[in-house]
Amino acid sequence: MESANRDEWLGKALLLSAIGVAAYFVLTTVFAMINTYTPVPYWDMWGGTLGFYIAHRDGDTSIWWSQHNEHRIILSRMLFWLDYELFAGRSVFLFVMNAVLAGLSTALFYLFSRDLLTAHFPGEQARLRLVLWLFTALLCAWLFQWMQDENFGWAFQSQFFLAQSMPLLAFYLLARSARTAAIAGADRSGNLWFVAACVAGVACAGTMANGILALPLMTVFVFASRQSRIRLGILATISLATLLLYFADYNSPGSHGAGEQSVLAQPLLLIQYVFLYLGTPFYWLFGEANTGRAAALMGTSVIAVVSISFLIVSLRNLWARNQTLNAVQVLTLALVFYIIYLVGTAFGTGSGRLIFGVNQALSHRYTTPALMAWSAVFVLLLPLAYRHWRSVRWALIPGGLFLLVLMIMLQLKALEARDDQVFGHRMAGLALELDIRDEAQINAIFEMSDGLINVANIASQYDLSMFGMSPWQNLRQVPGSNRASDRPDPESLPACQGHVDIVSRIPGEPRFISIAGWLVDPATQLTPELIEVHTVNGIVSGFGLSGYSRPDVAQAIGINTITTGFKAYLRTEDGGQAVWLIDANGGCALQVNTPIPE
Image 1 (cartoon, rainbow, N blue to C red):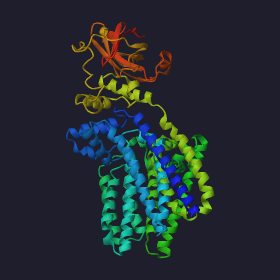
Image 2: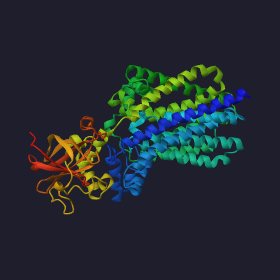
Image 3: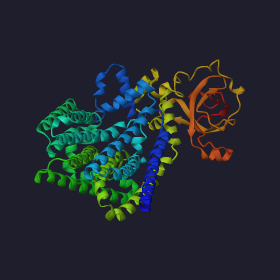
């Protein structure tokens, strides 16, 4: 009795610890997402979200099906549309969906784990419940690692999560339909699950280009698991129709290199690319450099051995030994084919991007499919670990704790400040709103081009996205105008503390110059968000934003706020004279000199 109570207490303690670990990873990743957030569109979002919505507003329905590079991101475009229609294009909804989709992946792996454990160990549900929740909590921590910062921290990246979670959903539904049909003794019982699987398979093609692999692999899965010829024919037909439709008006992006040339001319490099791609989690966990590369290559070798072993055993049981399809076999095969899908994703990515070098496989955004592949491997190995726990625990417990320590240490990067990154994006948004061609600043969010300026001009005209939000809204026409009559005279405002450290010309932009320094409202010890630049004659010369980190200033004047740095634009003709820096909310003002830059 005492031993049973001790085991129960230990089990609860372990579960609470695992839940605490999962909470640490989820909360720190969400914290990092909040710190990274800005409504200013970043990189592909200028054409992929804002440009898409402008085209949609103008009645171009073909934009939904049009390519984004080699992808047709229909599902993500639905989310982009919702973000603009319901949430004014603030991108908060898209950040939330990134986390939700990672949670969906965790839930799907939970379903696979539950069904696989139940199939292996019928009648042990009570004992399995603790194992299942313990495993799921740790898997949640694995899937919410901030090493995926290029996906979690970018509102545009929902397709990267969808391209991994939708095929997982499709394979689960297909396995569920096969199990239902096998138990009932007829396919009719699993028809609804099968239809749902087909719908999910078609939806995969609307995630990213690798999504088109899902339906063909689902077809092979149905054949390999000896399901009915009717299902095989239906899936084969849907696969062919989807592929034909996808490639009907397809244009191969020229900048990514020809896949055939990569495969034929550099096959060994392509294989190395794939191994690094699937091993990226261990590359980052083991400190990058040569140690990380070795860990990545060894890790992918484990994926290969585990997947091939389970595939051979399952196929041998079904075909050589002519066993009847059961839940263990169908769930195992579903996970193996999902891993094959991710391996195909790695090969497809490598064939198009090997031109950028093999190290491109180690990009942070590719950690998401790699983490998903490893999650599938963990689920496959879970029943074996449970069955042979007494024999393997001496290796699994120290190894698991070592891996967990590496994860926790790497996750600390999620707590790092991102003030300067956010400030750079916000300042680039100000340059676009004011139509100032500050290329060095604008390049923080996208390469300056006529296309970008055109999208920004239209968005500013219609107050779309950040252009309809404070502090950027309706600033474009203000420079050169008289101070508004309802605005207080800056001399009547309390004095700000601050200093202009740098006055610079903007290469290629003769109309404006930039100034940078620091500014603080002594009353609040905070810095104004939007700074108005006025001449002493009451002419609005330009605007600036604060938020750049200046710990030296905080230390010098004895305040806690470190984001006192600012940058502002003013008309070139107003340089070389005194100007007012005014808190747009009327908190304080400071007169400064702006010498003409060389």
